[in-house]
Image (cartoon, rainbow, N blue to C red; front, top):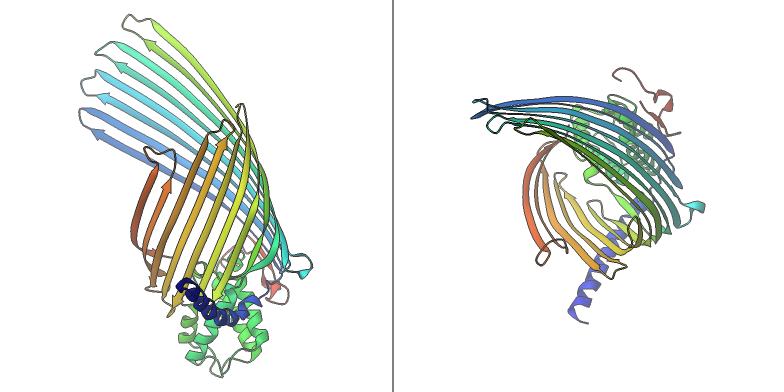
Amino acid sequence: MNRPLRLAAIAIVSFLPTHVHASEFRDFRIPDHTWSTGSVTLTGSGYRSRTNTEQSHKTLELRGSLSGDVSIARETDPWQAFLRLDASGFGSGREETVHAHDALFDSEVEQRRNFEWLGAVAELRAYPGGGPFGISVRGASTHMFSQIEVEERVRNAAVPSFSEIADEQRHFQEYLRGDLTFGLGRVRNATGVYQVWLLERRWLETGALRRHLSPEARQRLAELFYLQGTFANVHDRSDKRFWHEVENIFREDGALSDDGLNAYSVLRALEWPHETTPLFVRRVGWFAGPVAGVGAQLNHLRQSTRSTLVDPSGFPITTDVENQTRAYEDFFSAGARAEAFVPIGMQGQLDVESEVRHITTETRFQPSDQESVEMSSTLAYTHLWNERWALQGFANHTRSISALDTDLERSTWWVGYGVDLGFFLEDHLYMGLAVREWQYRSPNFAPLGYHRSGEVFLGLTYQFLGFLDAPGLVRTSRMRAVAGPD
């Protein structure tokens, strides 16, 4: 046996016991629950500046935005449905004036911008019959409109003249897409299992527990931790509600010691990673199958410009220019995707995802169509130890080969890889060191179209009306939206 085969055999033999040890992840089931949330955000800002040199330059800008989103989800173990609506609007006004101290030159520029965006995403995943196969339907819609108006007036007394330009741009874009996937396998988010294991270990160390939890209580806690994020959709102060439910499960199981929870046990429970679980998501299972998608994109750009020039003789010259551009594309894609998520014990996580698609794009208003093949793959490994250190290595790869019916072929590829090392100085204070590098080749870059770059990143991260129904898991009678602090 050559060396590569020996190494592969050693890796498989070493991996199997660890994979079997992680069976408690595979046994996790998603609790039956429904949640929804909605929010509105209003922002406003202003900017002012003044510069004096040979000329006086003043700038004044006001900006404002309004956005809102609504999400509704229904999750069970055999199926999940999700709907999200987003809408936002942005507007700004800007004035710039330049005045020469010798009064020979003056200019004024007024600019107004507004932007509206509306988006919707809906997804349904189902695993009919409880078998090892599933189907996923996903649709997305995006509508965008932007408008820019610019007026500019310039007076030059040195060469007696005056000019005025009014420019307006309107851009409308619409994007629709739908995907259908059918395949074998099942992937679940079993992060709650890891959190229960960690909490139980901590409270055994502090003496808050007299024994290990029963299998039934451990399963209920794992389901409760799965819902932890949705508590914030209902309660202003969600932590006390969530941990109250956690304590009730421990008490009902009879695992709490006679002394109960002291201050040290409570603070120990709140330490990382319970408060920052998105850094270490424990998904388990695999899924592979064909994927097909259809979509359409519409772009409409209209630009009009009016310019007026008054020459030294005082005779005005006015010019009007108007351009319109319309582009419509519809495309069909077909291919396959595969993913595998493997917990390596209770402190390691291996994630692999890959997809390949053949895309046919039909472009109206142009005489040619485009065909392309797009491939993408992601590999990541995350490991935690001593509840403070986090290490992640990753590698990403994408490749696109496209050709027009005019026999013009273009090939582009991109590769990225790196290592992130983090240490939690406190419960919410994270220090990270990242070393990353990426390479890509594209015909858009001359002369060879090859680019390679890397970075080293050192930084600190400080982490600073809905409905929830989970029958038999939490006290649903108290799950209600409140107007004030809860």
